[in-house]
View 1 (cartoon, helix red, strand yellow):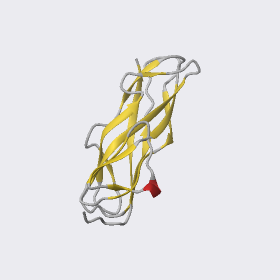
View 2 (cartoon, helix red, strand yellow):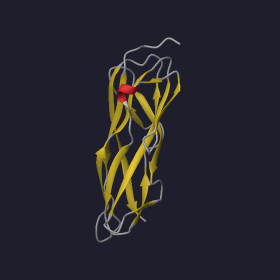
View 3 (tube, one colour):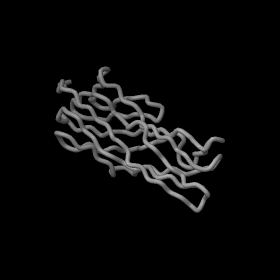
View 4 (tube, one colour):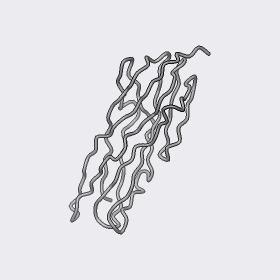
Length: 156
């Protein structure tokens, strides 16, 4: 295994959207932490995945570095008390992180809660976390890579 030993750090900050369906209060989302894939060495390529709970794993010839841990994106959702909502995440091959080398695509976005599972508390809030899988190219150029993606919420 021939690794390029310079670290790559990749993450995505989130652009958020607000949606409403005529409720007394709009549902809103605020990004409190961006999605980070942490630092890694590309080797001959593969993937880095971060789960909604923040667990990081590598596939292929990617080597994770402890000096740059990854973490799931985190949002605070606010709106009507006890309201339920749906979550729409980006599709595959839609979000690209850019940096000093070739762009890297994020796929397999996942969230907790997921899909139609969002429900605000009695205080009208809930924490939403988002993870995904980053496709890493062979001998990906070392450096910092960044991008944005949107999460769309709608009341049920």
